[in-house]
Image 1 (tube, rainbow, N blue to C red):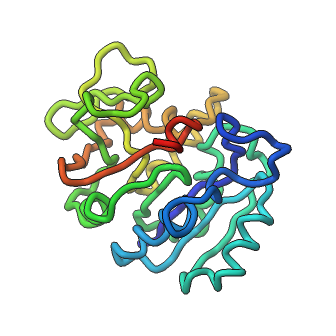
Image 2: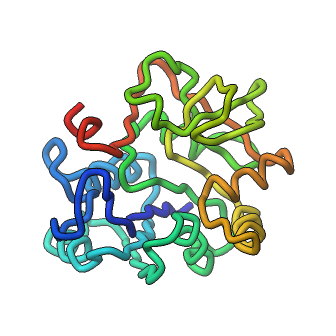
Length: 228
């Protein structure tokens, strides 16, 4: 299994274009947000990474080269349409994932090893999303992507859905059916991951893997979340 990390955008809610650094390279712990994400995924046993870059891509490439890619097998894909929705960044990886299931991570969601491993190892043929059912403890829940699930089947997703009982943690395990759904929503000028996921939901093809109480995750979408 390969891991796809989408890191093409600016992260404009923390940085401006004049800052000349992608958000994922902000300091975090003993490294950066990006190095932490890669390390946690590597610990799961995944050895091949596809990183989709766009805005200021040279900074990400230079950072990883300077650190000898941390010993990881990394393929870069340039997304010239990085100003558009994040679904474009996933779609262009299709030739690289070799028709196998793949782990998808945002470049600003830090998720603990145990949760990542259960998503990677989960026994299911469906598309999977890591979901936090403990909604009362979510930092900046107003901005979070909400999930409505029934047992483990996901029945709705979105930032503004009226009913929800979980939060999207930004980690997916996807099949090639995601690419089919992405192409379908692009015909209607929708270019987000969530739009394609909603197609999979309609096809009863999205299942939740639940984060446990001893595990952690955070979406570093704003300066306040970064400080937290």
